[in-house]
Amino acid sequence: MARSVMVSTRKGLFEVSKGSRGWGVREAHFIGDNVTLSLHDPRDGTDYAALNHGHFGIKLHRRDKGKKRWKEITTPAYPKKPETLVDLDGWGKPVNWSTQLIWSMETGGPDQKGTIWVGTMPGGLFRSTDRGQSWELMESLWRHPNRNKWLGGGADIPGIHSICVDPRDPDTVRVAISCGGVWVTKDAGESWVQSAHGMRFGDGPEEGLTDPETQDPHMMVQCAADPSTFWVQHHYSIFKSVNDGVSWKEVKAKPSSFGFAVVVHPKDPDTAWFVPGIKDEKRIPVGGALVVTRTSDGGKTFKSLTKGLPQKHAYDVIFRHGLAIDDTGKRLAMGSTTGNLWISENGGDSWKLVSSTLPQVYAVRWV
Amino acid sequence: MATVHFTSNLRRHVDCPRVESTGGTVKAVLDGAFASNPQLRHYILDDQGALRKHMRILIDGQAIIARHHLSDIVTPTSQIWVMQALSGG
Image (cartoon, rainbow over all chains, first blue to last red; front, side, top):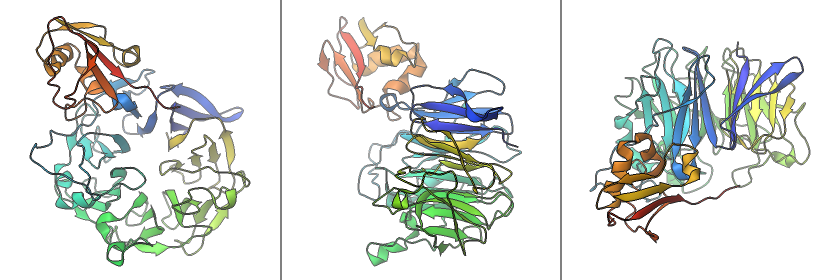
């Protein structure tokens, strides 16, 4: 069972665990630096941390099992862009072949020790088979002609924020892109096909509403116990697939279907959690009341979970990696843009505030 | 040989004391500095070898112009400063 939570924030990486006096921050790393994401590899106990130094670029650090010190390792880098190549994104802007954010990090299959997947802005997917010493760009996806349809959503440029390595077969990997739909490989990255059919936008020219190539899934998760089931918190609404992402159906929730984060119960594909905001143009909790919504019947109904969460003048936004569930499905961690961190130990029925003074939270992960 | 100076802000991340390096262009001088300190390269240049967006290089007080190709001329007595903007809250 996971014992602690790694909290990636604008000003450092914090380790949160439960002591005799409850949950609290136990350790802090990279104080003052922008830590955008972390990853714990349960296969060998290694921790990874992605940093964005702004002026000095993106860096990746690794901490070996049992060690105190982090060590900078190789950052995924793009190959030289051919000088004559005109490479434009969906907005018509030139694509900068340079890692501008590590937006997703996941481990490979249980038997692929040392294999790590990393998704980046501006849309490159990388794989390492040696614990991040070297990286390989998934050229077949990067050079796919439809990549030129991808475009930035909230950010200026497209990026891969979700990576689902299939528990049935680690050569099958699905990635979700803002804004580039969902892509799947079944041959360990040799070839890729679009898999966002059924997703849609709610506004805009009719011919573009359902184009899978430009869909904006904010976050995609796969149920560990029933890997054919996927949930997506999309820019427009919530979508669910029960057939390996071959097709997607919209699910409506109250008080809103807009948001960024989603988690699915590891043992029950019908149970998933979301954190709604008003809508894309007003990214705050509805009525200033922070709620988590939970469905336990596959999306037919949703319950608003409020106990322990601020219900007046709360303007917390939970970014896409700001909500995490542990491997029991009972404990959730949630960090907000205003530096609040909550933990629930009963599936979201009630929440405990762990800290209200953290920097802006980008990501939480159970370790 | 040209002298290359780095800011304390950069030295917080990478050990990069002042270094002497030969070469007729910024690129050649930097390549010389990176040869003995390879980790430094990606703190200053992006994946395409261009000067990072918020970095600035001054040759004897003058900002370089060729931020991508780094072809500005350097003399053997040049003082080169690798600088960065500071911003954010």
